[in-house]
Image (cartoon, rainbow, N blue to C red; front, side, top):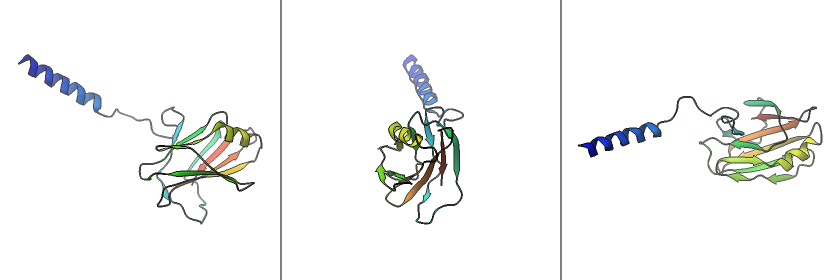
Length: 145
């Protein structure tokens, strides 16, 4: 009988530990982890979007930008495209997380007014277009379309 009682208590404790907590780590900063949780993906087309779905101002350029793509997106590829030169650069993707390296942001921050596009897509062209611009105080303005 004691063994059965211990088993029931251990099972209840295990189930309580497995339940999700109240609240969440979602939102623009993923609960302080430095990873931005992006809004739901949309189909990326050649026509430029006019209204940003999410905007962040005064983003630090002293640390890498990290974006977490939504679950509705398949395996993604990511490109960083400098607006002045038009040269694309592949960005590292680790699972559902896309990183813009510090070296890229640091170089971009040297030129106030610099602009770039980040395109994140899966094989079905579902994903994001993100526009990054450097402000006068050398922080970034990030808009998700």
